[in-house]
Every structure is written in structure tokens, then in C-alpha cells.
Length: 401
Image 1 (tube, rainbow, N blue to C red):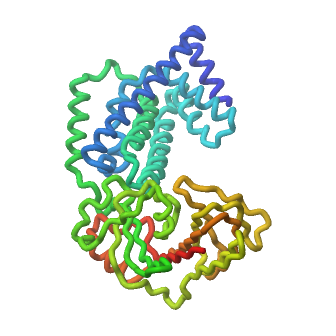
Image 2 (spheres, helix red, strand yellow):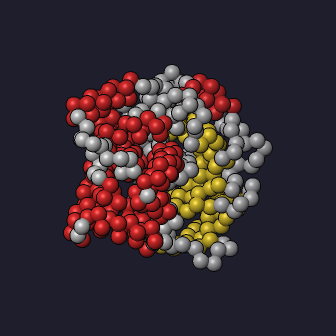
Image 3 (cartoon, rainbow, N blue to C red):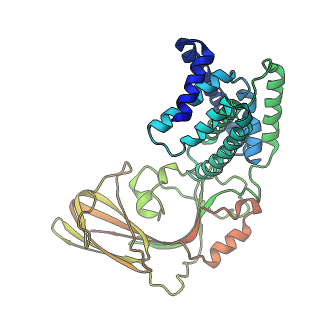
């Protein structure tokens, strides 16, 4: 709060009047916003030409990529007004990371502290990108995330640019465009993935008991916009998963670890023998019906969930005093995550339902791998191994009453 007040007072003094101080903040905000917008646009173009490649050079390359649009950020008084407001809001709402904005204010107030503030913000940018980029790379192949990552890098580069001395004169537009064009060509020529920054996949060895049929196989799920491009040699015998990700059968017939089917595109199924459960008992699901009451008995490993399709009115869980109300998902199913913290769990669920009810149990063993999974990993190229979002055994049991 003290740093924010000192920065606001100094910004007001430099501006000469409150109106000029507000104009200085507006200029700084527009400049940073423009940097983020330019970065997002550039990232969107790159996502069309070279999905998920352009930041493969790490944080330094990413910042260099978007420093040209950030070079147009205004003078010190503009930046001081912006950072003072950010720091003040952080102190007002007790945001723990507000110290970072205060570091920028102190750097702009005291010229000798500016290198310290610059180093602090470069470290913050490094940390944010180190957390955000891997997470965004795991949220599925449906949404193109390059523009979002581009905007994040652009905003960070714009904020960092406010802590460097202003340009004596605006950069030459032709030079800036040439630099961006060169970076665009370099990004397109770079490999999409490398052994150091491998592609993310989810690999599950699945056995399914669909009540009227049984099968097993390897389920390969891509988690980025390039889907399974370049993996034809390892997955030549695989068949596309044909279920509609927006309809109930996809959740009833496949053991999703998390309910994110709607963001996945391009997953495939590779026939394989049933997985070895390393001596553990298979998961079990039993239904018993009396009128509109259905008793659901579940037994299996610690990581499980049940999916219900039907006109569910209420449910209750044995041993749970206040269970959450059943909520119908957009795909037309109800889902409940089950865990007990032990190697083997059992649950009993009482469901009130009008009409027929279908129940699917998905049971996962996250620490268990199989020979088929390891053989598939050996067949994959080096740039698609080592960053698996998941590599484990799953069971699915489907029953209806």
C-alpha cells in the first residue's frame, strides 16, 4: 500500500494535473493491451501454420518473439501510473502476489532499483509461462491455445518493457516487420516437438465389459491441436474412436479419467490383450432394482467414478451424511467421482429414478503399467515419449436395469 501511494503521488507530480495522470495511465494501459493483442494475433497466425511450435525455444525465445510489439510502450510516467494502480488494487484486495507490482513501482521511483525490478519480473514471467504452458498443453485438442499463450507472452513482454528505458525514438516499422517475418519463418521451420519438449499423450490400457460384449485395447488420446499427426508408423493399426463426445454413450462406453471428453479430438483405439492387473481383483458393478429405487454396489481400486444415464431424481451414498445433489451434465449423464484412499474400495449408492437406468463404472490404476503399454512407448518416436499425461490401466463395466 505504501509503495502504491508513493507511486501514485510521484505519478501525479510528474503529470502536473490529475487529468494528465489519468491520461498517462490510459496511455500505459492501451500500450500494454496493444502488446497483448498484437501477440495474440501473431500467435493465432502461427497456430494456423505451425501449431504449438513457436514457443518450443523456451522462455527467452518466447519473450524475444513478442518484444517487437512491446517496444511501443510509453514513457516512465505512463508506466508508473499503471503499476501504481495495479499495486494499489493488490494491496486493497490483499492479493499475495501484489509485491511483484510494488517491485516495479520501486524500480520506477528509484533508478538504481530498476535492474532489480526487471530481474524480478523476468523471473515472474519465467514462472508463469513454466506453469501455464504445460497446463494449457494438456487441455485437449479441440481448442487452439496458441493465441491464448501468445496473448499471455505478449502481456508479460509488454509489462517487462515498461521497466526498461524508453526508446529515444520509435523503432523503424520495416525493421520490426522484418524481425517478425524472420521469427515466423524460424518458428515454422522448427520441429513441432523434440525429445526435450515432447508431445503430450494419454495412454490407457483398457478392458471393457459392455454387458453384451467384451473387448480390450490401448486407448491413445492426443492433448494438443496437432492431434496424432506424425504417429502413423506406431499407430498404423489403430482405428478412430467414433463416439460422439457430446452424447451419453461416450461417457458410458469409455473410461475417462476426468470428464473432459468434449475437448478431445482425434483419439484412437488399438486392439490389445486384456491388461494384467498384477494379482488384483477386477472391478465389479452390480445393480438391484425395487420399483423406482436402484441399489448400486461398486467395488474396485481407489480411483473410480460412476456414470448414470436416466431420469435420476435423487441419490444417496452409504456412510455419507450429506451427498451433493445429482446434477445432469450437458452430455445427458450424471457423474460421481469415488475414492477411499485405500488400495481397495467399496461403495453403495441408492438411486431414485423414473424409467430405465444405465450405470457405467470406470476404475483406474494410475501406477500400474503393462507390457502392451511399454511396447507402444517403444514404438513411438522420441518426441512423443516421456511427457504422458497418463499411462495406466483402466477397466469399464456397463450395466442397465
